[in-house]
Amino acid sequence: MPKNTHIVILQVPDEATLFAYLEKLTCAGLALCAIFEPDMNNSLTAIGVEPQARSKPRKILSNLPLLKE
Image (cartoon, rainbow, N blue to C red; front, side):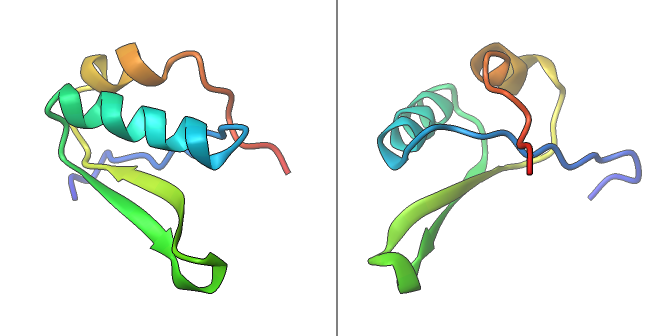
């Protein structure tokens, strides 16, 4: 990973929304990794997007809120 890489964690309300974003990111040609949790019936729990110029993922993800604890 490049030295100036930042990790940003965004949240979605449910798995269906996460699948919708997975499709949008895939259609945009972004390199990513879908993460499925075996202990939760193989539910989609996260999507990791490869570090790249901000503009591409930002167009798709800009309306999602940051994860709050």
